[in-house]
Image: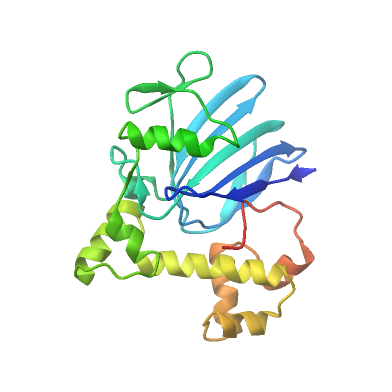
Length: 233
C-alpha cells in the first residue's frame, strides 16, 4: 500500500534518473526538496497526462491521485528546455496540452510518452529536435569542475539553467544525503559531522525544511505518509 517507487540511474549525460510508481490506497505524500526538474507522465482511469515539474526548494504535502501510474525523467544539472524559463518553474509546474492518441504537445510538436526502459531514446530525440539543450558552464560548475569563466558568469549561468543558486543546490543535496544516511542507520550526530553541519540543531533545521522529517521520523518511518523519490547519489 502507498507508493512503491522504482528508480534507476541513467548513462545519458542529460538524465539524472528515471523512475516510476503506482499509487495504491494513498491520497497524499510528502514531496521533498529537489534540485532537478522533471518531465512526468501519468495514467488514471484510461486518461493520460504530462507535465514539466520544476525544482522544489522546500518539503511539503502533495496530493496523490488514486489508482494512478506515474513515470518520470529527472534531468541532469545543466540540461534545460530553452523555451521554458527555469526560474518560472521553481516550486511550480506546467501541464502539457494533450494531443491525439495519448500524445502531448511540446514546443509545437506532438510527442508520444516514452516508457521506463526507453527514456534515453526519447531524450535523444528531444535533443536532436532542439527541445533540450545542455549548458556546459552550468554542467561543469555543478559537477565541481570549475569552468574557465568568471565566478559571476558561473552564477548567472547556473541560475539561468536551473532557477537556483549553487548555494541553494548544495544545501538541498546535502539534506537529501543526510536523510538517506539516517535512514540507513547512521547516528544523526555522525551524519551532522560528516556532512559539515555546525551541530545537530543545524541538521535538524535542514531536514525539517528540505525533507519534512526529523531524524527520528526517518528512522521509525513515522508518520506513514510516503516520501517522494529519495535515493543515494
